[in-house]
Length: 127
Image 1: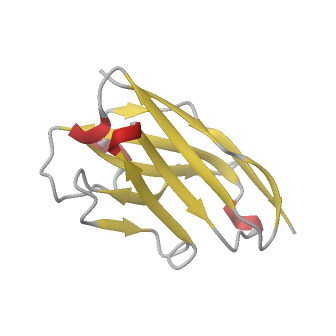
Image 2: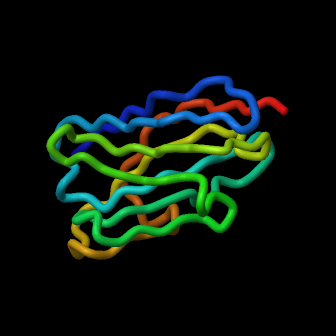
C-alpha cells in the first residue's frame, strides 16, 4: 500500500499562486497513475487534474485549464499541483489520489477509480 500526505495549502489573494505537494511513502509512486481532486463546502468532490504513470498524458477540469499544472517527480516520490491566477471559486480542500495497476500512458478522472487518498490540504482564495 501507499500513504499520501498533501501540503502547501494556505490563504492567498485572488490572482495569486500556490504549489501543492503530495508526498508518498510505503511504495514508489512510479507504479501509480495520480490525480488531484477538490471539495468545496456544501459541494461534491470534483476532479481537478490527472497524470499518467509515465507523465506522457494528463488532463484538467475545464475550470482550471490554463491556470493549473500537474506534475510528478518519481525520484522524489511526490506529486505536485501548481496553481496560478487563483480565484475565490478555487477555495476547497484539495486531495491527491493514486491508482495502481494501470497502463503507463493512461490517466483517470473519476474519483471512484482511485484506491488511495490523502487527508487533504485547505486552499482559501480571498477576493
